[in-house]
Image 1 (cartoon, rainbow, N blue to C red):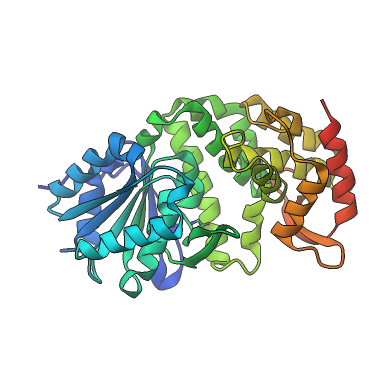
Image 2: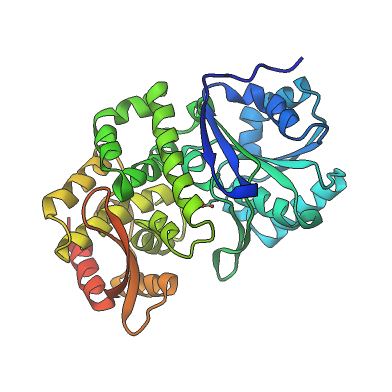
Length: 376
Ligand code: GLY
């Protein structure tokens, strides 16, 4: 007997020809994991890749769901944190997958947040020249961002995500009940990526979030709706530009400023990735307003919502010493490469109206950031 496939789950298709897949969103979906895998790949074995924290909370339920559907499985548990996205972590997971006798036709299940999705996805991309994998995200950020889109990677000594592959999953199963166990700060950091979809391309969704964010935090239908709208937005962009040669760069709204602060804080828990994105988006809106692209009141509206949910929106919101202006500019230049003094940024003409601008004057960015660093 297999667990029933819930019919009230929300399905978001990612249309990529023969690499198309569904994102299935709903409360309590983990119980249907085995039945869904058995339906997609009858007879396949599975290796679950997860971390120690997620294993404590959700591994037993994932294994029970697979056992219920008769899917043979092994698990591979790595330490939590970015350190597992290393050559060493990659080697260990590859060797464990091979030792588990996972063959072509079998699959890997990434049960966890962004680190696990990126690592397990990259292992799936290369072991036996490519295995199927299923994403089971356990954080809000992974639900709406890292589990969708097929970018997989580990880190190099030169920077994050520099060794990787495009490899689309077979299925994304987003069980919104798994988010109940997230610390509030982590949920809030993931919410920055939800707000990003409104800010970059969907003004009515942003207005909906302004009115309904408390319900999104509380769980229930509003949370599912926010995740579904976010996934639809990402799926549409990925379907248009799978390999990031154009439009997909819009997903980097807030990431250039944000990444500079995140790196300048040593990727520590002083500033989580989503928090850095929130700060970066507030700065991208303020910078765009300073360039005359939108009224300052509109930029302030974007900032106010992020601040209202408790996300950092000004450099002074970050605890501890801030990177110097020189250091921030160096990090921005490394991230985006300056060409003849010009930088590429995602700017905005309003809420829901982001665009890629290749000719941003590095001097104007420096002046702007210098002003922001002195704000209290
Ligand atoms: N896996 C994240 C992305 O493709 O954007």
